[in-house]
Amino acid sequence: EVLLDVRDLAVHYPLRGRRGTVRAVDGVDLAVPAGRTVGLVGESGCGKSTLGRAILRLAPVTRGEVRVDGTDLATLKGEALRRRRRDLQMVFQDPLASLNPRQSVETILTEPLRAHGLPAGGDRVAELLDQVGLPRAAGRRYPHEFSGGQRQRIGIARALALRPRLVIADEPVSALDVSIQAQVLNLLADLQAELGLTYLVIAHDLAVVRHVSDEVAVMYLGGIVERATADELYDRP
Ligand code: ADP
Ligand code: ADP
Image 1 (cartoon, rainbow, N blue to C red):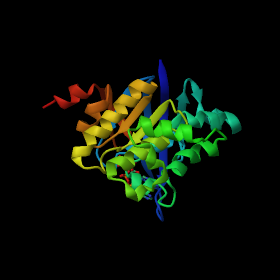
Image 2: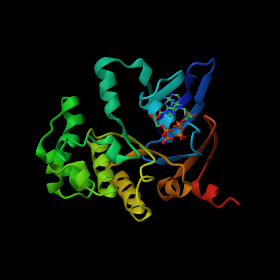
Image 3: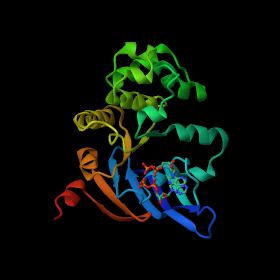
Image 4: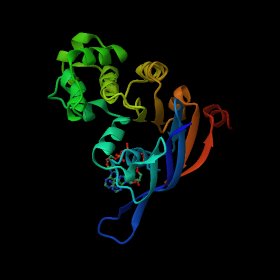
């Protein structure tokens, strides 16, 4: 069963002050089965982030479809679109850049709930903190008081707040010390087992996606050029 089905997706940006376009994403087909992890690898600038953001409608879609459970997101409006958006959440590379330094962790975790009119009580905050392995007292503290790995745990908790089905993690560990990376990847894997999540994990480093992915899609110049298991790619001479 396919949860995310991307068909012929394209994101073209105008070249500033000149004719022509940057084909950041150009005709991508990508299916992610429910409950699985697909890694998205490729060198810097090949379009991975743009693809991830376009799936969540955070980048402008030039052409193509993003289907979730068979429904094309472009056909949804209003409340139906808002509901569907809850199913799709993102974990960003740099937690400090994506967390508001003036908000307490509790506020960071409850903001998405309040924005969607959902109960945002202390019980839910405690549950989210438990899920990502942070102490409950963390709720009253601020992002700068935490280490990089802990901050990424806050970023993951925020992504989980709306009980998504698909999480797109864009370079989730590349800003972290190598010694912390495995802990965060193990947390993502544990959460998948516990919550039945489906992941698209974006990384320039094949070793990172190998750690968590069932399958890998290789991106090059805006397109997907290969789909294989991580071990098949890793063992290649
Ligand atoms: P990756 O994540 O693989 O490093 P990106 O998706 O960040 O690649 O970028 C793909 C290409 O699209 C790059 O050439 C980048 O400069 C360009 N690009 C990304 N975002 C924009 C934007 N907002 N406007 C114009 N060009 C962009
Ligand atoms: P990464 O390679 O880690 O994805 P970048 O440094 O390429 O990040 O991009 C950071 C931000 O700048 C993104 O929001 C991206 O959309 C934007 N961006 C990247 N390239 C361009 C570009 N050529 N013109 C305008 N915005 C860009």
